[in-house]
Length: 511
Image (cartoon, rainbow, N blue to C red; front, top):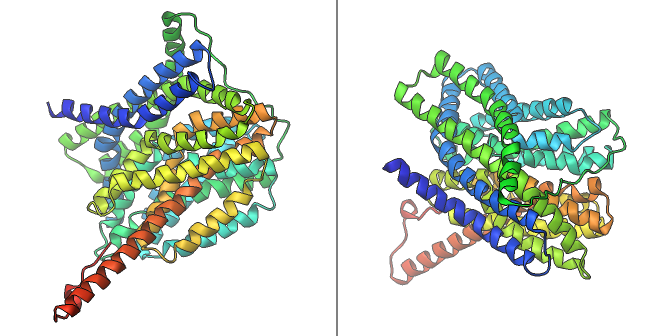
């Protein structure tokens, strides 16, 4: 009975996440951007699969990926051996990144670099920076200083690599922190921070995703110094043509085995690594192990359904809508429409749900999932508006990323530590499979319609989505700090007026 109630709860959450974008697309289809019945039917069936996939994935991540990450993180820390912690962390980062489905999609978009080389380089970057992130956590090193150093290196390298690699490099930082990576690495951070008894341990449990997002950017930039981009031809998504419901069913069914195989290869290394760790170190009870294994089955089924629905149903619709909107007499209408889509579509990202719940639990509700969701939605809406300005004008992505990251890093020195860590984590989390499967094709379709360069103008959407939440979430931190100061001054004034002093020990501490 409990599991049935949990499934219904997850279904309701998935429905809330996907329904707004479904309504927006339908309004466009029956209004200013009509699409063929084939694409519409694919989109509707894709939406059902996305919701079913989200329901199963979020349940599976809750009962399997999170306990796995926490168990491994806490057991690593108990060893007190830096070499062991560093070695295991690198291995986990490497394995989980290779398992990330979004990375394989990105690798296929970069014809100048062989897929295997691209994937291995990015996985190496994530593994290396996961080691850096865990050592930072154990030694209590400030996150803003590290981010400032690494992003200074990133923007320095940006001036030496071919422009064809620039947007793809920044996009890689977003796609590698997706539905596979986020639950595992975030939970591992909580496990590692649990051995620290100081009051900043909870603050430092965040920040792993932010540093792990830097590794892929540097890795792809280094590849850009080695490889030279060849003549790449943009291949748009195949626009499906279905004549009846049976053909529609066969279309999705024919794609299902490929995603079943892809997700099996993705989850297998993680599952095998955990089972090996269980045999050698963890030795969890059979009851806990059984629950984790059932959770892995839910996670597998959820990811298969989610990616099938997103890639088969959402991708062609996004591409066609982008072409239709940019082909209107006033293509500028694409900017507010993309912003509206961005505001709602980020709620459908599986990893966003995991982050929001983790933040609410770690902060004991001081930063609620609803507030986090609003901050992310505002950030992604702004980023989509700026991304469509790029598509329509051809402005270089650096004109947005350099001032954006400069502002984010500047704010980080004035807000509570936990807001900075959460903000930079949220940037990587917000740019997941929904961004790659719907928003990126939307930008590519619009770019084709206005005659732009796909590689330099359309790519970079993921990078923009990963950047703006850094500012909006930290903006929430600034607002919270100002409100806390006002409350303290009001309390002090009231105490003074009543003739009582407020002892230092009784001062209210605001998060």
